[in-house]
Length: 180
Image 1: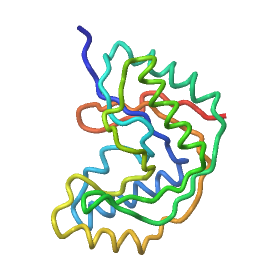
Image 2: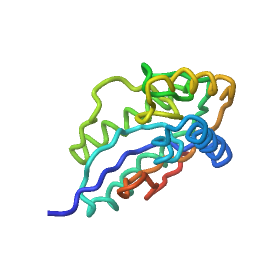
Image 3: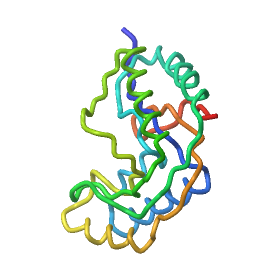
């Protein structure tokens, strides 16, 4: 039996914005403590984490490339910050219809081609995580206030989709595909 790896598929912001978001995650870790968000590059999750045999990685990457390169690009708008309860602080994403359609195509394609059902049956709320998982009680309000002052209002053209693999410590891109 082949070794099982953990993967997810995410939309990556352009390098300049990615660096800005990574700097924000580092600032949150330095000022407030939560650092779990640093274990993955800034991204909008299109397919939540799933397990697949390591031997299937090249096939997953080729499948992703085939799907994504036929997909037209679209504009993603960042509109301030939001949160899920008091456990996740994120940059709000107002996306074009193209993001929702791409996410559905990826989730359905993974199910059809690889038998991978979404591990999270609830709806798709596109966002860019700033802090989660290791926030302690009482940190949430301070982190939200800090993030609200930072603003996070901008837009970018969606171009890069990445197959991410967990290496035991953090997530890393193992294959990228470009939208049209």
